[in-house]
Amino acid sequence: MPSKTSALRAALPHAFRHTLPILAGFLFLGMTYGIYMTGSGFPVYYPLLTSLLVFSGTMEFLAVNLLLGAFSPIQAFLLALCIGARHTVYGLSMLEEYRPLGPKKFYMIFGLCDETFSVNRAAVLPGTVDRGAFMFLVTLLDQCYWVCGASLGALFGSFLPFPTQGLDFSMTALFVVIFLEQLLKERSHLSSLLGLAVSLCFLLLLGPDLFLIPSIVTICLLLLLCDRHAQKAGKKEGAGHE
Amino acid sequence: MNETQQLITLAVIALGTVLTRALPFLLFPAGRTVPRPIRTLGELLHPAVFGMLVIYCLRNLQPLTPPYALPECISVAVVVIVHLCFRRTLLSVLAGTLCYMLLVQLVFC
Image 1 (cartoon, rainbow over the protein chains, first blue to last red):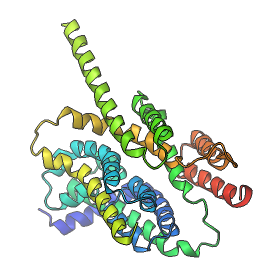
Image 2 (cartoon, helix red, strand yellow; image 1 turned 90 degrees about the vertical axis):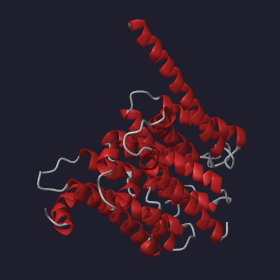
Image 3 (cartoon, one colour; image 1 turned 120 degrees about the horizontal axis):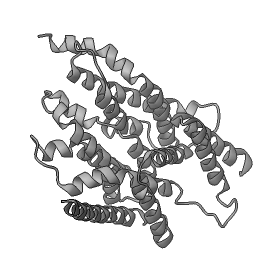
Image 4 (cartoon, rainbow over the protein chains, first blue to last red; image 1 turned 90 degrees about the horizontal axis):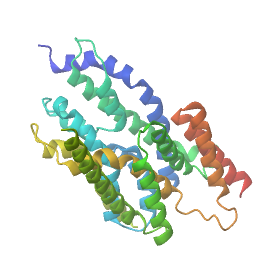
């Protein structure tokens, strides 16, 4: 049986090749994030700290906004849970693959972001490559790209030869693209439109500082209600066929 | 927020994020069935959250006073059009951000 080091060494070229597209994306977005965070007046070590410990692009961009607002740890926690909710699904579908792996699985669970999940879920490897070592390296490389990008942006953002006013729009643009992409792909627009409509209602009702928590709670309740309704309808239908 | 409050906020965010990733492994060792509400929210919440985040990003728009939220509206339109044409996330983000930066720095300043 090959040693752990040699298994990692053998898997490295494969992991690198599979994560190349992510390298470009994470360096670019990471740098934007680093510039945005430090440009908003926060210390250089914040982007480094968050890219190491939070490692969720969406949440990190949002964190800048949260830090600029009033102190509200409950809102921050709820947002982190909602934004991370999809990772729970990733975890569920990786349960069996990650479970038998040794201590490295704890890091792999921590680093299970969208991009890492999509590579690890779909990768087809030659039989000689240890899958556990490969998935570990994919997780590690992806985070390295992100940390590098964020640090570069944080360190060198202030030396950019042009004014960066308006750079914060990159977050809006990113979320618009993600939203648009899901509209183009999803079969049912129920959840997307519900999110849009409920938050817009609460924004108009309560104003920009208070609308987030009521929106989150209402969206969750409505989704559970819809699901229960669908479940009942499905059961009735099932009974009708019998 | 002072620095302590900022670091608490960041810690809470880190905790919430890692919790969502660790939840399946903490709660469901060796093939226990996952309660339906958790599975439902895990699958359905994501699209709604990004709808909410788009609204969140645009929460401070003031469409009734000059410049009538024009920089944001134009730039969002640019993002949507570029993305529908090319379907390349980075390109769309870059185009929209550049458009917005030019508008607020040179046109609506």
